[in-house]
Amino acid sequence: MEDSCIPIVRALAIWSGAIAGLMMILVGGLIPSALIIPEFDIPIKILNLPSTWQVPSLLLTALVCGPRAAVIASIAYLTIGLTQLPVFHGGGSLSYITNPGFGYLTGFIPAAWLSGRLAQKVDSNDVAYLTLCALCGVILLQIWGMLYLIIYSTIGIWSETLPELIFSYSIVPLPAQIILCPAIGFISLALRKLLFIV
Image 1: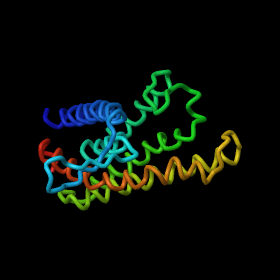
Image 2: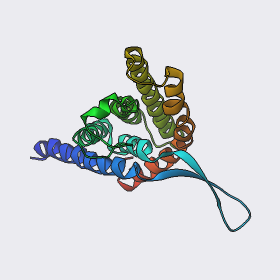
Image 3: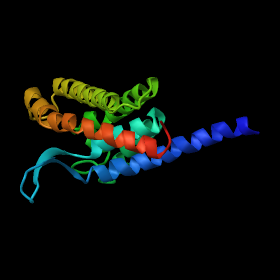
């Protein structure tokens, strides 16, 4: 009896994680990221970063809920955005496929899988290792998006040059995404302990 319940419990955990991850990705796209700089004065200095919490939300889903839940959440997010709901930066619909940023959105799927798999591979009770898992996801996401830019630039559908596109879509947001990786490591470890995953 107990053995037959395990697949059901596992499926419920994956789908619950996928739904939670989808909600985090949707809300994360609305929350700008910032870096708090401690000072001796009472007003804390806040440095706004050119990024949102969308990618960190995806990576948190992968590190906490696992690769399957994160991939399902990524596919659901893409499906919602391609069916006319304006959840992508600048809108949504099937025509968004020709947007230079769409390659980075499709990169959510392999980045989620890689980060989640790496977090499952070894004893991941370490903030440094979880941060590294998140960083691997960011790097794969950037590579995937740049490949999309290269392929579509050769077709010539955008007015911007390839270096301009890479600068706008990769180089500008990359430092912020890297800076947020330690925060992802800390938050994911706390959530994993809270949910008895570790």
